[in-house]
Amino acid sequence: MSRFFTSSIGQKFFMSITGIFLMLFLLVHLSVNSLLLVGDGELFNVAANFMGSNFIMKIIEPILALGLILHIFYATYITLKNQKARPQNYQVMNRSKADWAAKNMFILGGLILIFLVIHLGNFFWHVKFGTVDPISYNGGKEIHDLYSLVSGLFINWWWYDVIYILGAVFLFLHLTHGFWSAFQTLGWNNDKWIKRLKVIAYIYAIIIAGGFATIPAYFLIKYVV
Amino acid sequence: MKIKLRVWRQENSKAKGKFVKYELDGVDPEMSFLEMLDALNEKLIKEDKDPVAFENDCREGICGSCGLYINGYPHGKGNKIATCQLHMRVFKDGDTITIEPWRSQGFPVLKDLIVDRNAFDKIMSAGGFVSIDAGQAPDANSIWVPKENADKAFDAAACIGCGACVAACKNSSAMLFVAAKVSQLALLPQGKAEAKRRALNMVAKMDELGFGSCTNTGACEAECPKGISIENIARLNREYLSASFSEPE
Ligand code: HEM
Ligand code: SF4
Ligand code: FES
Image (cartoon, chains in turn green, purple):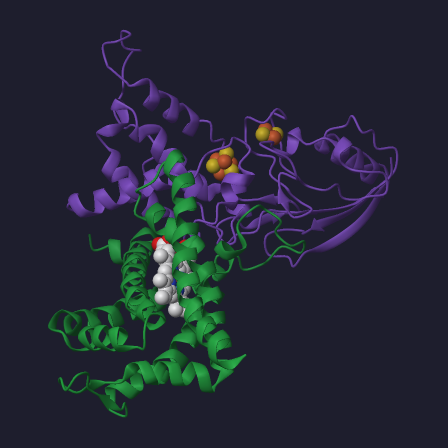
């Protein structure tokens, strides 16, 4: 067991567990965000405030942060080690058949990370450090008006819409490989399931990336152009 | 036909090495790739020059010694062939062919196109065998092996240890090779007894020898002359994970 943490398969195990955890989080995240597209924002505000304040999410939040940090840590470590494993490169570029996304997971991950920094700066920061306007519905309790924060951003600064759509594209590519790769790493695979999981990977990636891209696109089309 | 060659020449493992250009006339499309290299070497010997060192033995795709990286493909472009099974008919008159040795931390170049694949032997000695005498061939049906397992073990056992998987992988990972060697035994009763120790020790050796980590790009499977499937890598992961969580060290 002690060797496990430093072994190549052990490290990949943590990448895959954290990756799966992040993928589950994305599903929850998208479900809440999809409420941005319905009505005047009340539903979204209630749901987002619930997610931001309830006890379970308070526990999951640091785990999620830790998961992301571990994922990035191992990604960097493994990528550097893998580059060292071929001290002298070929002169003719490697033409062997492999998906583009599979060969560029670290670059895609890096682009996602840049997006995440921008994204957290846009929303998370404001929520944590209390610069969000309050709102109350039908004389109820005051909650954060997150809907105005989000819609304001997407309506007033069109380039943020572009950044968010690009973020979704990078995520799409990362997931088309990451999804099935995670199961392969866990050993939950055989010839039949590799094919099936590759298809499911595309379906999942389309739902997640398509869903996230639809939100800025909706505000862009409805209010900006 | 006339072929232009760019061949990696390197005096010994310490030397720096460089590409040297050759032109070879009278190449017959019927020739195998290695016969073409023989023709080049005959020419070089006649000119009193040092022939190109390349490894080969069976010339029928079973020994695994002939690996060359040809125009960006291990064993050249072609489905499930070793370099010795590549033929000159796939090239055109006037083509330039670049020939490089396998490139990997685990496979240092010894001379010209020959690399040291001892790392694979070291991985095998770490556990790629059954350590008791398994005795005579048992009576049919005295040990039951499901047909599916027998087939899969047989497919895995087709690995010839050529190293094309390492050469093709952007991470120089030896996972397909190790996966094949672990799978061929893990699926059969004689191999089961030591399956856990085998997976742990062979992976430890693979890591120690400087091969990279698998990121499931699938390039190995695409280049393997024996069509070893990455399903074996999933099996290796499975074996390794379960061994790690259960085998006290
Ligand atoms: C929401 C964000 C992310 C999700 C959902 C995600 C998901 C995944 C999944 C499921 C895998 C497959 C794991 C495996 O095969 O074991 C993976 C692999 C990988 N990820 Fe991420 N990831 C995210 C962010 C990042 C970031 C920020 C980076 C880098 C800075 C990154 C770099 C990588 C790398 C290098 C791999 C290895 C490729 C492989 O082994 O298949 N990822 N990711
Ligand atoms: S798995 Fe295939 S490519 Fe790798 S050493 Fe065995 S035969 Fe060669
Ligand atoms: S010479 Fe034996 S496999 Fe090519």
